[in-house]
Image 1 (tube, helix red, strand yellow):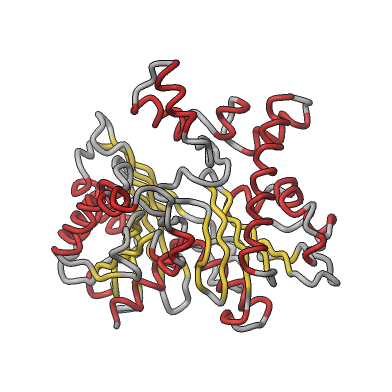
Image 2 (image 1 turned 180 degrees about the vertical axis):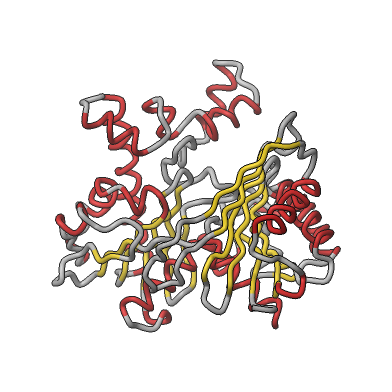
Length: 412
């Protein structure tokens, strides 16, 4: 196993998640969460995983989960807690066994268009780009610095959510505002969830047995954050998120598209500050703002009970999905494969059916029974056998995609 494992780190401001992946089998060996960093009492969960490699039957042995509460003042201390968990519970983790440490970084701006081996200059650039992602990049940078201190002789690779969308044409990423203002403040559409869209589109191409370069695809990544991307020949050509992850679809707590003049109106009439408007659109809108709950499972339960707010919330959610699907059909000039992924995309038949319900004219025929009874956690076809367009559920694996890209970059 020497030199064949990748440690994937997804770091936020007060927590980080990690996975250790054996790249020969692509099996997850261990995973964990270090959270409440900087609080009075921190917590860490380390799970020794006995998952199967892709395509293999599940093992009979159960995962081993270990939890600890302790003082975790910063990310460096958090990494020590993680290393102690590996030492105490396994599997063995040392620099000789690691081929790379892969880091998820939300925003790479227009500077980073591929996975990048981290050095001091890359750190400076990630820090400087925090102005575009103040809620995400600073935490990622803390994780990178702590990991580089823990493993100074192992290649560290930054994989950017925005990188996959660097192929967007200028017409797609340009906002129609004063050019000089836009250039001075780097205002343009960047797109997010790139690792997921890349992973799913490539998995879909393998499944249908056609070259990625030949396919026109639409991928719906529908989780608490949600985005949809039009992919032509493996290249992102249009995506719903913009300069930030706020633009586009209705999400768990984010509004998605809204008339900018609404903000001016609220500032004038409700005396709302910039911070209050930020909180409104990012944390008090979306499904939560419409129905009082942000989880689609709760929405579905309330819809079944006849709750009018929940019914409207689901209708608004689906309406936006359908609008983007139609727009991307036009941008691509037709579509060969449509995929749904992430928590809502994989587990909510009503959202999938609603998104495609009026698109039969484009050759999309959803099989109602397949859609309703698709097995959880499996790549599944939910279109009819006669449908010219293949519709899939493709479970995403962003950590594996980060690991693959990190290994390739480290060995380049």
